[in-house]
Length: 169
Image 1 (cartoon, rainbow, N blue to C red):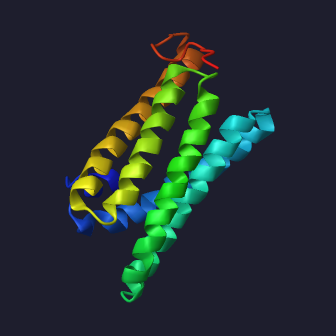
Image 2: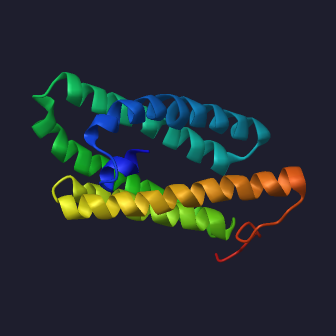
């Protein structure tokens, strides 16, 4: 939902809706999913879900602080650039692991790395930010596809393209 604003499809007035989504669905929901994955013994899933859940809670807090204290905005720009750069690196580290998972996960983490890289530049360039929005929208669509591909496989026995295990490394 944040990418709707980043890509220029929605106005900044949509941000409160995004913040609620970020805190509860992106943040809390992913941390719960991560803990459940860890309980099942899926270290990769647990680490990824918990990490990105914490990221979305951080997005909520950063946006909240920047709205409530306008003096923080100029100071937060450099920090936001570094933050997005570090998340790009983390996403690409996760991508390496997906090279032994499946094409769906590979697409998500490659696109996430690209999105975060563009977001880091987008702090300083509107064109780069807009490109990040589009990359993020494709990444989000990939994540939704992957979620339903796994649900269809587990619940209906239907194998959609991209979920077959791969071993590229």
